[in-house]
Image (cartoon, rainbow, N blue to C red; front, side):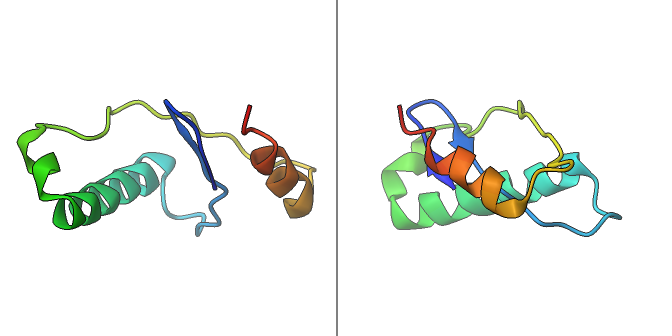
Length: 75
C-alpha cells in the first residue's frame, strides 16, 4: 500500500469469484467505518470516498515487481 495525497495504491489478492467492484465496495465501506469510528469529526462528511476506482491485473509481472512499483509511487 502507498498513500498519496489524492489516491491510494493497493495490491490485493482476491478470489476469482469476487468482482472488482465488490472488492472496492467492501474496502471503501470498511475503511470509511473505521475512520469515522476513530475520528468522530468525519461523521459530518457525507462521503469519505468517491465511487471511482481503477483496477488492473498484475499479468506476467511478479508480486515483488508490483510491490516495488507501489513503494516507488511516493513522488
